[in-house]
Amino acid sequence: MMPYVVLKRSSVDELGNQTLAQMIEEKCRLHETYNLSWLSDDFLKRAWLIVSYSGDVVEFAADILALHRMRQRITWRDNSGLCIVVSDDIVDAQGTQKRISDLMFFITEFIGRECFYTLSFAKTWFPKLLSYVPEHSEQE
Amino acid sequence: MRAIFRGSQEGKTSSLAIELFLESHGVSVVSDEILKELRAGEVPDEEPCLMIVYAHEDVDIASGLLYIHDLRMKGLLRDRDVVALILGNLVAERYRGDLFLSSMVRLLSVDVVTTLDLAIGRVLASVLNDVSGR
Image (cartoon, rainbow over all chains, first blue to last red; front, top):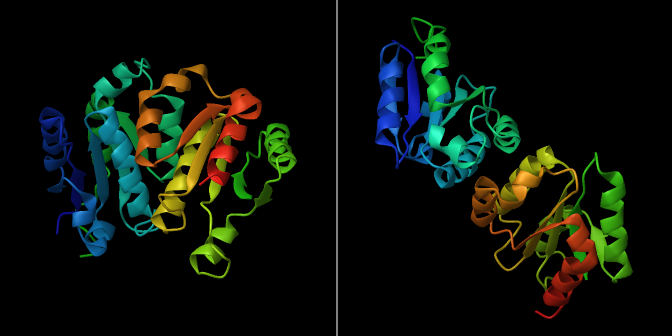
C-alpha cells in the first residue's frame, strides 16, 4: 500500500488547503481532516507524515495546543513525522516577513515538528520532502 | 500563601529576585509537585493556587506556555487558579504586543502577562493581594 499523509486543513484558508493537498496527492495517499483528535491514535501513528496547516494566527495558536496534546500520545518515536505549515499572511501580520519569528520557531520545535514552513516555502520544499516517501508502507 | 514558581535556567539572578520578592511578602515558593497532592486531596485545598512562570528570553516563553498547557491538560491547574507570565528583559521587544503570543495566552487562560520590572515594582504585589482576598 502507498503510504499516506494526514493533512489538518485550515478552517479559514481553503486555497492553502488545496495547494497542500494537491502536492501531497501527487506522491501519496491523502487523508484530510479539520481536527486531528477526530482520528484514531493508531491511524495517526501509521501515517508517514502529519501536516498541519494554519490559515491565520489565532488558528495557529489553537493548532499548536492541539498538536501539543496530540504529541502526548503520538511522539516522534512513532512512524509519523510532523510538518507545520502556516499561511504567508501570518508572518506578514507579525511583521516578520521573509522569516518566521523565533517564538513560532521555538514553540513548534518543542512539540517535535520535523519542519516548519510558510505556505510559499512549502511550495518549494514540500516536493523535496515528499520525494522521500517510501513506495510501500511497511506498517500496513 | 503558596506560589508555584517556574524560573529560567538562563536567568538565575532574575528568577532569584522574583523568589526573594515572593518570600519577602510571606509567600512560600513550592514545587509544582504540590499540585498533584492538592488534586489528590492530600493537602487541604482551600485557596486558589498562584502559578508564576518567568521567561528570561524568547525560548523560555515557548517552553513556559507548553508547560502551562501540560498542567492544564492533566487537570492540575484549574480555572480558578491564577497564572502569571513574567517576561524578562532579554525577551524581544516585539513580543510585548505580539498577536501570536496574545492568542496563546488567551487560549491558555493566563491571567496576567507583565514584564520583570513591572512585576517586581507593582504587579506581583497586586496579584498577591488579589489571590489572598479570594
